[in-house]
Amino acid sequence: MPGGTDGRCAVAPGLRERKKARTRALIQATALRLFREHGYEATTVERIAREAEVAHTTVFRYFPTKEDLVVSDDYDPVLFEALRARPADVPPLRALREAMRATLEGLPADDLAAARDRAVLILDVPALRGAAFGNMLATMRALGGVLAERTGRAPDDPAVRTLTGAVFGVFLELMVRWVEDPSVHLPDAVDEALAALESGLAG
Image (tube, rainbow, N blue to C red; front, top):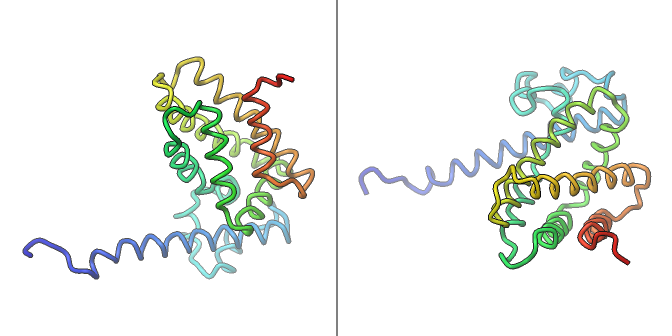
């Protein structure tokens, strides 16, 4: 058909995106390994690039700053999609509990281990805390937008902002607990904490 695309052209963008995702994951995994072995401050971006076998500029294409190698992840869209998929009549916190469990239980063990490594670094390295806080604020706003959609409220509605802030208070406490105790089973811990928030600590 004139103006159409053949099968190869249709598949190519998907292949490119998968290749980009693999490269990004390789760079971050290499960085986290080097940070564990040599420390965050002592590890240069140049060394990360060398060991990942990519150009120095490639690292910055995927991670604009060194801090982004630790604080960035690809989980927000997965969580938001799971949250939007909950039935409309499910209350907001219950829907979030279900979406969080589905998201966390869907992560491979290696991804969870990497997430804990990142949490350890964020708590241990002062230079990372500011970047992590900025990243958390962006995620809070995005989550608030999804919760606003579910409730028919505006994202800046005080009730939406209060709920979102309370949820992130829970997440912060869980991050500290998980760093202190690696035996914590994160899907269960998140579900229990959000259940306590949902019940208002009643009983």
